[in-house]
Image (cartoon, rainbow, N blue to C red; front, side, top):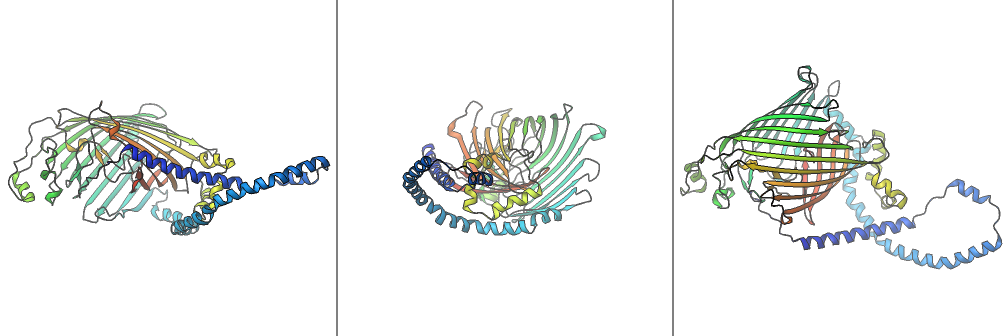
Length: 530
């Protein structure tokens, strides 16, 4: 249950491995270019006809041209021979290997595309005359206690016009449970106000606490309940600028784990008395958020910007304490004094700045495929061949390959907490940096006082509901706002797919790496960016 893996790789080793990877990539691209230059270019029929009826050329010019051609022929043959030798391994080794690797994936995808499985599945989970009801299963098939089955129910205009209800219960392999209910109503009382209610319940015996500034975690079962209320209104006529207010009541209930070795009580690395570990208390966050949003689509944006600046003040009650009897039952002895609240001020402030921008490249008016375009594009992914892939990288095609219907997405985040009394803020005041921050190349998470990150994604449409993604992201954390250092600088990168509609996000499947180390599978219904 403990996860104490650290990153001890030096910068020089990382750079060496990255340079090796780039050298192999350069060799691969060189082979592509060589083959692209050898590939015959079909002649235009009009040019062939005009050449056939052209006037006879001067005999001297013909002789001269023939002589030049005869002299150049051996050189071209020699050059072509070297090129064929260089290309032979890719054609006779790499291509068959790729075919073998791709086949287990391509065959099911081809069947799904040819038989309309995706469209049929979407129709099966969509209900109502206006197609405003969605009911679909959700799951996490990772081995271990994180295996989860559940469902999500989404209903637009369920009670009133322009309201939205989401219900999502989830049941885990070890008996844990998570429930989420959200209700939002726009145009409250005929005004431009909106309101929202959210209820969340955790029953998680594998909940963790992470020591701030590290990735070192300890088990701390969670049975907390959260009730959130929010409202807001647009500040401008076009609705791009808006202001939101929210308040919550959080009943924090963290208990001792079943095994003593999973507890921080047996490890003197952190003082639990001021952080509310393994205790009950209440929190009352009040938040104000200034938003700017001119994105073209909410969940699959291709153009525009989004900015969010939030300030949250969290009132925290006294901690209920931890008795010696409870601790003795777990660790087997009574040499542990009672833990009680010391009368400190546990309140804290959290600030969150998020900036996003999306760059769209291409002649098409929209990033999304029509259903007809999606059917045509499927052939490349289901009938993969080496020649077709290389044709994409010919000089005359490379512009369309890289910059037609493509989106580059950037996100910058800066999150800080400020304690009212040093060393007294509750354990969940510290932001987590993990796959949803996002930092997708690491299986474990950090906790820190101050965090900044920069994420970049290169997206392209694969199908009507599916986008491909390449991502590269960087993160830095600090114990103090002026203590930023490249000693705490991290990077992750990877690729994957995201499944969505223009107005709704479903899930994503991505593989993340840090440097050249390991792989982390990300399978979640949460979007990459907030």
